[in-house]
Amino acid sequence: MDNERRAKKFQEELEKAEQAEKQQKTADSKLFDPKMVLADAKRVHVLTDEILGEVRYGVLSKRDIDKLNAEEPDADKRGYKTIFMMLQRGYPDLKLEEVEDWPYEVVARLSELLSQRFASFLLPQQKKSPNG
Image (cartoon, rainbow, N blue to C red):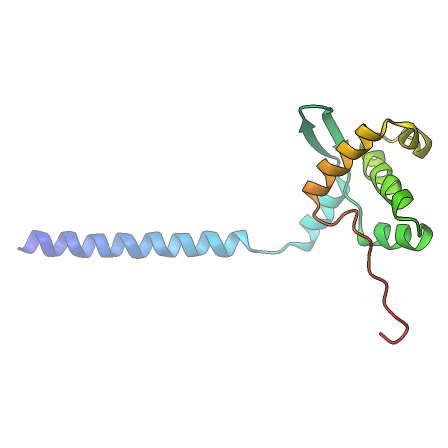
């Protein structure tokens, strides 16, 4: 009987320790680090596609998107420029004219791949009305 009590107590302590460890991991994984976000935003990312192969790209900042939206009212052109700007981070010598001359299938595939990574990267930003 004494051994059963000890085993039960040990099991309860083990479960408490596992629960505390799980809670700590959850808390650790939810920590927001602005410096890490900025560092990650500045690096070149790589994705591998079975059709296009390895694609190097960079993420755009809010400032980049705001500037692009202000400069380019046409959604199609904005889409090409968005892809160009992201790819230019991985391919510094790339020119916008080159992207515009690519087959549409390639641009469509890149748009699909990048939009899967970034849920709303091609969605037009809603403009605020003068009233707010």
